[in-house]
Image (cartoon, rainbow, N blue to C red; front, side, top):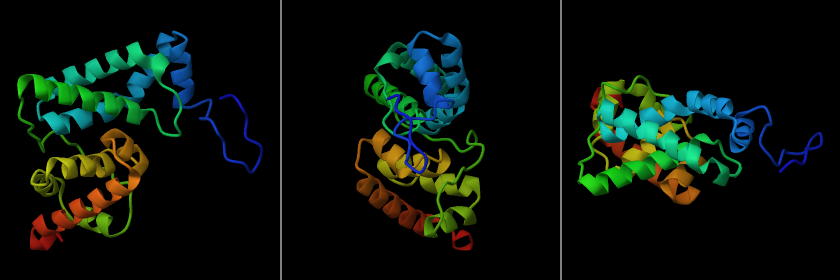
Length: 196
């Protein structure tokens, strides 16, 4: 869309100087713009893949393949009111599923590779997360079921919104909120007494 919002009205299109402007330029074949998208989102995608796969080399390979596929499909993406990062993570998620299915690879998580948490919410969930050390928290996250692990990772480790998490997990926002609530309650039970 190219309509400009009037003062006081919400914009109905992305900020022309932001990530979606880079997407638009990439869609016309601007490789420098796509390179900027790569630089901007590589770490987010890599952390997501690394957390799911637990193997740095495999995570690097899948992250690279994510951006190769994104480049091939860049003309098919359109603004949906969300950050383009959610689209990159969705591609990575699909590649992980393909890898797991094709090789019957068992998902393993690692704590040593996750640098730091990037919490993006407040309230009781944040109190639980703030009280724990990264290692202990990640040990407890590994005890959650796979859907809960993914929800916690996307919401708190990657800092994605409920809407972005819902898009990636192919669920509605209400289901993600409920999943997040159950996961945080379970984490609170799993955390040692001193960290609650």
